[in-house]
Length: 147
Image 1 (cartoon, rainbow, N blue to C red):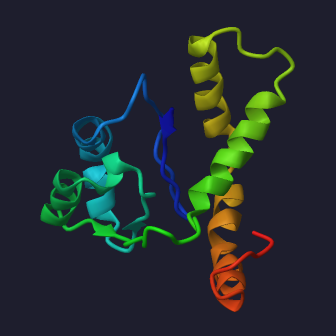
Image 2 (cartoon, one colour; image 1 turned 135 degrees about the vertical axis):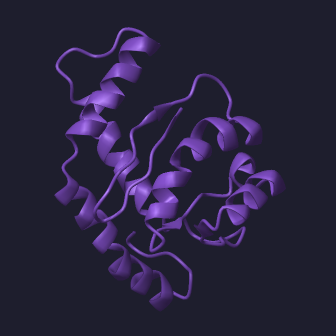
Image 3 (cartoon, helix red, strand yellow; image 1 turned 45 degrees about the vertical axis):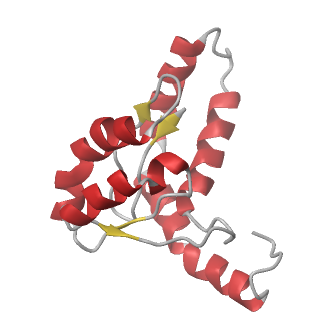
């Protein structure tokens, strides 16, 4: 499992997670090191999914105490997070390697390498596409769209 964040102009490093991710480790090992970045960019809104480690009261309180803006997500809403498109791009690039990873350590290294090779322009394009995607979902009244 990995965690990363992107904006139109920035990205975090890719965090490789060994095993399951629980609220405490999400808060301490992933969010805490990124709070200064989030606080330095008050225009950024964190858009987590509904994973229990992301929605735990301790995590939400932690973010609120540090004035980090979080986009609320209704339980049954479509996933409109641009990071999902980044994960797809990363997956395709890792799978396209001439020599596939032979173990988890090699896979983690490949993921970090390919993450670093995604251009900021590609990330900006994905973030900018969200207006079009949200419009399509709204026009479909939350139902199926081509996204």
